[in-house]
Length: 174
Ligand code: FES
Image 1: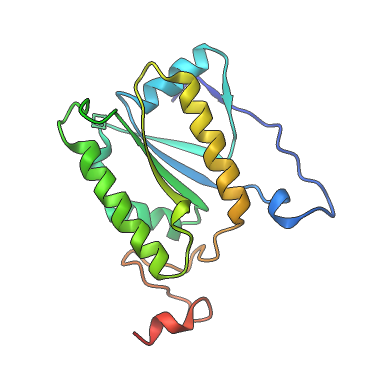
Image 2: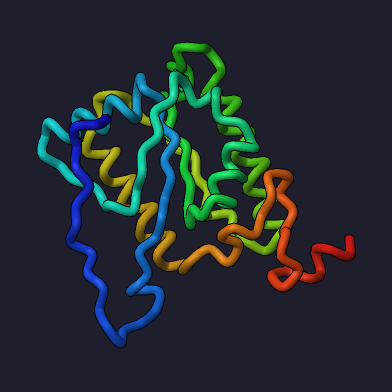
């Protein structure tokens, strides 16, 4: 686990704006050679990141497939991001480029079912970019908080189809 610690200073304000009160759930698929190592570095630098972000370590972002990304939303994530090595520096040559393509394809699926494509992002960083790791986590948290809760929590199957017709009835007619 990364040594860096999630911060806990986002408070819930009773009676306030729902989006501001909303505590997002964000899944971060992080390559162990870069983003995950950057998280460790951030920890040793005593930098924190929002508790909304849950980090999953991968041997390479090339291991993330479209089903993993869709399943993350199906399982309740409000936002998801993939953080891989800098382009040209993947230890498996093209893993991060494959991940980039998959992220783009899943963004299209999200858009087709009426979900903001911005809920899914791809980032590239090096193991030396500890502060950037925390910056990305904050950026994503702010972005997802602005979107509000995912309207498809538990309503999307792994094929990208909306299971609950009450969510987007028009998607069931095509
Ligand atoms: Fe880091 Fe492939 S080894 S993205």
